[in-house]
Length: 72
Ligand SMILES: [Zn+2]
Image (cartoon, rainbow, N blue to C red; front, side):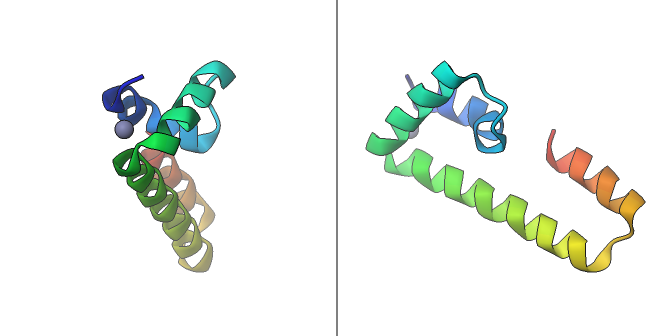
């Protein structure tokens, strides 16, 4: 398990789309790697900020198109 593997799969890990064996390996890595932990928390923060912002302001169609972009 390397940092680059974690970074490459971070999005899937955060969104719960990663298969369970890879997710487990990433969790193990995160326990010993502070910089990857920081990456995960940055991504969590970004996604929830976008969600909250869109909930407040955007019409449904715009929301859908932005959420599709951010999940790429
Ligand atoms: Zn790492």
